[in-house]
Length: 320
Image (cartoon, helix red, strand yellow):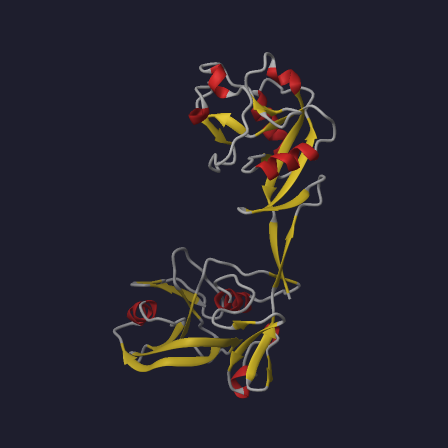
C-alpha cells in the first residue's frame, strides 16, 4: 500500500506493504481488492493525484479506482470490505486521522482503516446508518449486506442490513483512587490525595502538580459549583485542598491574572477573600478551604494545604 495526497504522489512505497505519510488523504491499496459501490464510472484524469482531487471535491466520495494505462478514474461512495489480492494495484481509499477503537476487536491495518472510515464521525453506528435503540440499520440488498467485512458483524433481515450498536463506556485509571464524574463539558476522573511532605524547593503549586502527574493527571480545574462540591467531598481529611488555579506571571493582580494549569478557560470561580485583596503579592498556590471558597491570601498559605485535587480526562471506550 502507498499513500497519495491531493496533487502529491508518494514516490517511495512497498507494493504489498503499507506506508503511511503525513498530510495524506488517500491510501493506495496496492496488493488489495476493494468491495464497494462506484459513484462515477470512467471519468478520465491526467493522473492519480487529479483523480484524488476529483474525489475530494465530490460529496460522498470515499475512494477511487485509477488505471494508469488508460487514465480512467472511477469514484467510489461505499466501501464494504478490503481484502488481500496481489493482482490488484488500482484502488485508493480515503484515510482519516480519527481512529475508532472498539474494545475486543483486534484488526489488521486495512481493517482498522475501514473501521475508521465507516465510523469517521465516532458515532454509535456507521456514518449514514439509522440508529435504533438496539441496532444500526441500512436499507440495502442482501447481496451487498453479505459483502461487509466479517469483523463488522453485518446481517440481513426484512430488507435491512443491520450491525450491532456501539455502546460507550467511560473509564478511569486503576492506579490511584480515581472517581469518574460527568459534567456538561465532559467526563473526568477526580482524586484528592494528601499533600507532599516537602515541595523540594519548587513553587508550591508546581510541587502539587508533580504529585498529580505521578498518578497520570494534573492539578484540578473547576468549572461549576457541583464540581467544586465533589472535590470537597473527596477529601480524605478535612483541611485545605490545593487546586490548579495559578497566576499568569508569578504575582497576583486580580481575577484577570489567574488561569488554570490545564489551559482550560476560567468560566466559574468561588473566591473568598481572593486575588483582589492580594494584588501584587507573590503567588504560591490557590486553596479550597472547608467553607468551599478559594483563597490565595492566607498568611503562610501553604500551611493550610492538607490535600491536593487531581484531575484527568476519562478514557472513552467503545463496546459492541
